[in-house]
Length: 489
Image (cartoon, rainbow, N blue to C red; front, side, top):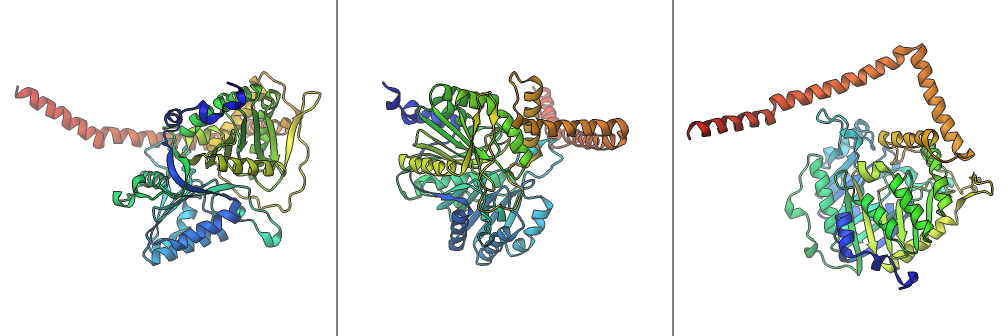
């Protein structure tokens, strides 16, 4: 059988996708691809306005700006009308205490608001795992899944010529909405809430709305479903694999999967931001370009304000859209939500959208002297305000810095001039901290001491819980029961 007669559909069975992602293939859906805030936000607003029973929102970032306030006020109005409105925001992404204050007026009229994974004495580093999902469901019959958060950066400002951040989302109707509702119910439960089972729809009770087959992959730190799926697709794709990502920092295993695919003749392309909301992360990400380029992977940088989409399209018929970035924090550390589509029409639409994005991007190439050349991008139509996107959490930053340092110190390859800015910045920071430690040791010792003291308090608290809490009392009761049983034998 020739190579061109094989595609991803034939190469992988439905069972392989199910075992890898943990998500079943659900047929009979309609799915509409929505581009940027200009298409997503109006549809979200219209859907919320139409709600009669429930509005469930799970969002990593809800900014306290014009866009965030518009959504808050609309949901508050629906709560006044008797609609059950639930909002789950991430404690780190939405700035914890500030978000609590933002939602005060909405709480007063009946909106139930919870924070995902706030700092807790029960976990030393549990805060590092974030709820990075972007999900909106309406009345158990309509769902939106995307890479967009809620904020002015995604809306842009047409009057001032400011383009929105580049992002992608989907609107889903049909039986698969039940899977989206179930994922929200699970996240809501983790945040301390509960949803009656009668309010969570079942697939068989939702009417078919189209002929699209898809999977709702609700990944968590325990499952890493999208990571395993991304690795399998990269290893199995036959002709094309086109990726868009906001904060690329592929693991060695994933980078090698991309390299191997390209060396085997697959057309592998990666689109990432040039100007990022966290520019030093974009700079550090460039340290990974060389090995990909040497294997034939084509790398492009977006010329607009910010490329925030997290999408993939393989062999023109398989696509992924959602919240998962191609980095270890998203793959293994966070709660993420993506829709995986198996449909040739939508695959073609995603391919066309990707090619359109490449026409507004700059390709990164190797010169004859085997150096990475980063040409200056064409001027964008408008520069969006630099905000804080969904890649800002500490864990991701630490991992990215570690990757650059590892490349500089132990990497087997030469680093190019375009990668030097990142490494020079990192070295200056490290040298600066060491100088402070030498000449002003208290400035370093006090914060370190405070961190160690905090960790000590957490460990002490957990130890007391184990010794005197419910677990200890249960063990004591079990021991007494065992002794009583032996005594009566």
